[in-house]
Image 1 (spheres, helix red, strand yellow):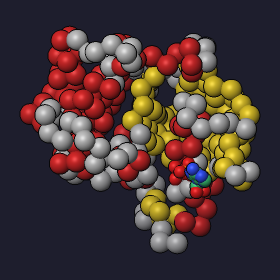
Image 2 (cartoon, rainbow, N blue to C red):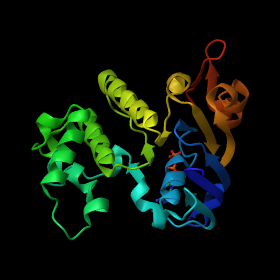
Image 3 (cartoon, helix red, strand yellow):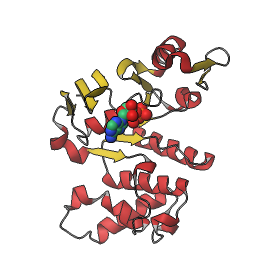
Length: 249
Ligand code: ADP
């Protein structure tokens, strides 16, 4: 059964449609890049799938059932910029939030949960920062803490919104190897990504989006100049054979 099935999703903000009739399914155990220009509706698509914003129409299923029934199977890493990092809390508490789906909101996390959260921090190289206020972490460290929280969710399907934004090369490497580790455990990871140069290297499959679905499928087949042109239009510049990047305008 498909980890994610989206049928005819349409989303509008203030009556202006930003996603039109999006349908796709994703295969299990793959890293999938969601690619498209700024304003294409990539974040909106994830938020609509997770029920964070209302859909004008359409259905989503996670392993054959509605998201609300499968919530525990789903992990989410929002854009780092969408969070108030001045909120007074430390790295460990942020990661423990990932456990609430398992603990229940009104119970205190037990020793096991704390141990698990610490092991997640360790996985992203942040164990030594467990007690650190999140406002005092660098952008890359904040992103690592977000990933640790997603690991703490112990999900089967992950949605990550631009996890590589504002991180240094070392953190980017650490993140991609973590994503591959999740994939090797049979998990499905969908990642909003904007660096066209690394798409072929990072992702098994790509979903090209610009308000409408342009294409989805194995990267080798779908990540073509022709499809990129359909996705980015005039904003695309070509460097040499097979290499494309987003131009100035
Ligand atoms: P992407 O992630 O591909 O850059 P978004 O999903 O953030 O695109 O945005 C898609 C479109 O929806 C853009 O035109 C954006 O301005 C608009 N939009 C996003 N969030 C809101 C909101 N909360 N209210 C109104 N318009 C929004």
